[in-house]
Length: 121
Length: 107
Image (cartoon, rainbow over all chains, first blue to last red; front, side, top):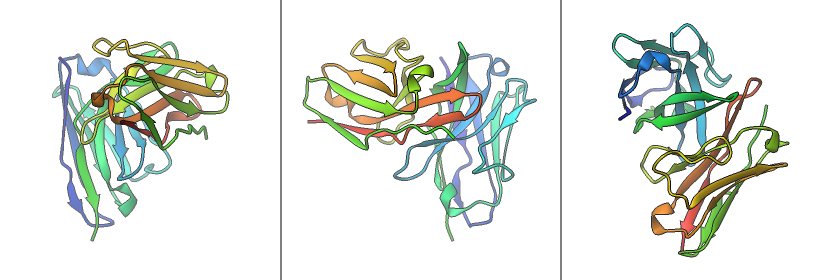
């Protein structure tokens, strides 16, 4: 059974940094690309980063490019998200999710329970 | 960038059929996926590739996609179906795109 467990959320001041982790089990971690998706209070889901199975390719939307960094340790089955220069609008629950590529489309078949990041002074 | 538009809320009587729409320019040419998110819980994939159900998802959940609208249909709606529902597409130019989410209320 696939399990994804996030950790590392908390309260951070604007301009500060925070690192999130996601420990995976139940599948061959290195075979799958992974994503981080967030949900801010009162808002919909927003994709914030993705990484290939090998870790060699990373992707970001403009809203976090240059501030967030995704990485992975395939020997430990752990996904990371390093968040720098945090802003109030980064406040959200952050989810890690397992990607599936099928017939030219990508979707997320398993999600973790999420970890809350609050950016406030 | 590509945008997906969902109604903020949809209400349905217990046992009736709920339809949640996801609008986008020529969305029928794209592949749409749907997620259910109950309060305080992680999203769960309920429909992938327009109309496919993952194992464990009841047959009451179905999907369609044509023209400028994709639709998630929930037949015989139950109290446990109350949740936020999010549509999503991916393509090489826009990457990951989610709709704003629709809150389903079962009356």
